[in-house]
Image (cartoon, rainbow over all chains, first blue to last red; front, side):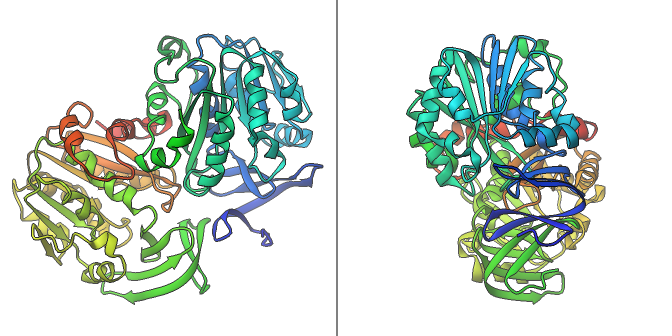
Length: 285
Length: 285
């Protein structure tokens, strides 16, 4: 795969490939954990790929990062301390730190080279990594979170696919530890893969989370550069309900310039097509 | 393009391609209007392509056909006569004819060979083409609709892209004629391309429709086999408002087994991400 110098092949499955013409290859390295590549494309601008899977593109990263964070942060009544698991590119943290109520935050990524690559090649994504409220830790996130208790109002799991270094972030044990690390009223969100192409992975992930959380919702967003265009996110709560407790007032007072998330999109993203609803009903609350 | 026997290349743009592995080629012909191909794929099941653009796949056609029709048919208070422009595969008509209130319908497709191919190779899509309420006409739909007046409660424009035989279905004149062909209170919907990849085409289409209709909405659905996964639809009305006039009661009494559309999805699909809203605000009502 990816043997042509002018094209990048993103495999949705062994038999479906999104091929993007590459205009410039900027960076490629094998870190101790994964292959990291940065290149420019005509259609999606600059791309960060991990193990040949598209992780971030300039063109649509705002959708993913807004949707991983704001639905939870505008459901929680007053989040103060947040943690991002993975997410070394910094995009999720950029969105979290827009919230003035966040007093401190921790980013835990096992791979320092992802953070460095993002700082160098994706300044608009990594722009909040020097925020004084932020602590960056380069260590195994599953081990880190296992030692925390009653500490976070919000945890965002910005993992790679379960085949890569993110594998431990898909287990029941990890979700039980996350629950303990959350304060009462806390919320965890996670990217939860493609319900269309990888329903088995999605199902297992939700089943893992349900061993720890009573209330688990699925919501979706459109990610043109990701498998099938349809991406799902998991919303696990120690109390708040994303539809009942939407913080309309705080959202109205925020003056974020967002591209995808809005009050209307908050409500809309939790509506699931019947076929998806039925497929995953047994692992949703 | 498409010179490899085992792969089909769907070009999203000259520099972005969705490649699908083909397990069997079933049919290929050049009709007087376009190239028609039918083949089986691993990921999307059987595919009908027109001029090498994916038109219908077994796997996700239900999304497109449900969303082209039900949002309008469950907004109109009592649609009786419907017309599909294009849509020779029969999928849109299948959804329309689920509605018992539809007493008669016309399908106008210029290309009989599309209808024949669908009857032969896509029986689950073409299954309603023998409904006694349906008249099928093989002629230029723009010319057909120009001769009608005050006749239809619902028109669905199920066109190909503007580069193919569907070109005339993107003009202001066509939309003015459609408006005349609708009864008071009538609704027209149209597939309206990818706002992410082809915003210029989308903009021109809505501008054409706005010369004829005061009220034009955009709504979206996720179509994994289409460009970018995000597909838009246009909702033009001679009265009813899709959010205000949703026929909750009639929907609740219908017992259609739908995969994508629901009361929740009806409301959700009209929520547009801010960046799309802003990009097209000047051509939306």
